[in-house]
Amino acid sequence: MKGSAAEYRERLGTSFSDGWTRFWFAPGSAWTLGVVRTTTAVAVALALAAYWPDVERWFAPQGMIPRDFIRDLYPSQWSPLDRLSPGAVRVVLVIAVAASALWALGLGGRGMAVATWIFAASFFHRTPLTNGPFEAVALPLLAYLCIGRAAEGWAPASRLFGGGGGGGGAPPLAASNTIAVRLIQIHVALIHAMMAVAQLSAEGNVWLSGEGMWLAASQAEIAWLDFSWLASRPRLAAAWSHAITLYLIALPLFAWRRLLAPVMVAAAAVAWLSIAAATGQGLFALATWGATWAFLGPAEQRVGAAAGGP
Amino acid sequence: MKTVRTPQRPAGWQSWVTMLLIVYLFLLGVGTISNLGGQASPIGRALRRIPGAVPFLQRTGMDLSYEFALASAAPQEAPHQFVLYAPGPEGQVLARLPDASMGRTRAQRYRQLASYAADFDVAFAENPDLRSELPMAVAQAWLGELGLPHDNYRLECRPLVAQRLQPVAPPPDEGLGATASGPIELDLVWSEWESRYQAARRQPAPLTAQPRRTAVSPAAGFEGAEPAAESPPTP
Image (tube, rainbow over all chains, first blue to last red; front, top):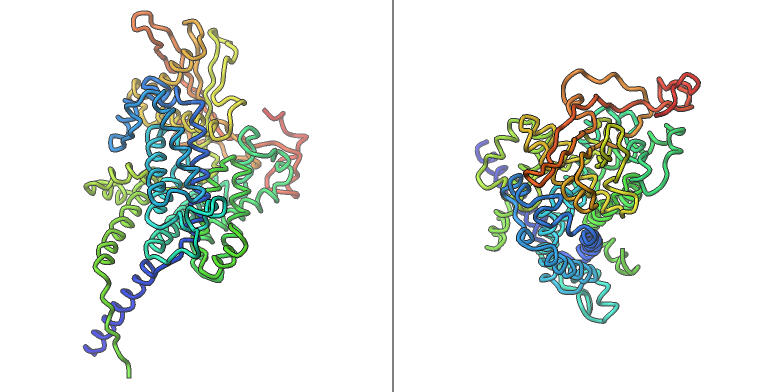
């Protein structure tokens, strides 16, 4: 009896240790990281570029977000832009947008990944009161992409210029790619699960009653399209709302299964496109949908690579 | 016969990375759990006292619970906008932030800022200076940019409340639903002495999400929807 208990403990330990090593450290491809890199970097470049008309308002010491007020509120945060004049911020902004755009193409390797992350964090941390869900999703994604060889996977630069990442055959497999992919998977699953929790506990039970997407889409100046016709089709509004909630619950549960992952990524495309159309949060939708590609396995990656991209 | 396989010893770097991953995932959990429901859980608040946890979470932008509901019936969770009014009790609208000319990402940032102004109005209710600091900064920069003469303007931080499809219960007399319900109105007065605007906050009338009265019959949609003939005009 004593022997079998010890044996069980040993088997359990061995199984957990092997599973952990396989999960985190099995050498993996950079292809899905390349897709996540492209969508995240494009979204970050657009978000950074949108600062341009408001540099004086956001970054002047006595603008709409006074620096001292922000630092009192968030004493642990710091940004290199804190001490820069609006003119200097404009110069940094041009460099930051260029770095993000080049990295989206797969140029610059890990150095460009780190630069893009630092630039994005600098801008987002200087203006935390203007940050929404997109910034909350983008920053960890950028950090994870610095771990893997993201520039080597799905790099349009290699096709455009014959160089850059991904040129000269398939990139080598690396454990760092797997670590990055796993961290993205965990974070994306967490975001979906927490969004589902938020919907199920939203004030007024608006998601359980099926009003959620109507409330999100009914602001004409915010939504991409005019959804006012939805008021006379409450069952359609309810079906849309319930489908979004179901998707948010299903992804963290089923995307881990190899067989279901492609279905979940396809569902994510539909769900996030409709969320973007309703809420106007296109960058948030793009970054989050792009990150769901991290769940795709080697077989889907081969199909995607043969088809020419995401 | 059952055999016990000898575990493969992980490479040295894998042990270190494993340790880092465990610490990182723990902190990710701390960030999520501790912010859940507006830092409601005592366990979450206790976890925030772990040395170094909050600075790490804030510096990495992960001090949040990712509870993006996308929509809610609570006016304080609705997107907000700033509206600047001309002097006088019935002063006309001078400008809005965001305005119609802005791109979506820009406009979302102004709505987010206005939502924070509304949040701070509740969170700093005991401290009038802190409570009005953000809207005052917005007003100061905005009026300066518009080049308007020094006068007594009014700044409003207004929720863009969507009309609900269903009739809703009357708002509670107290509690979260009633605290930040109305638009925040600040009377701006130019102080020659300090060469800047000062603000006096008006007390808002309660505002709650209202049911949308449409021509939808109960049979066609939600239970309890009233026929259009009995409904007052949509505001």
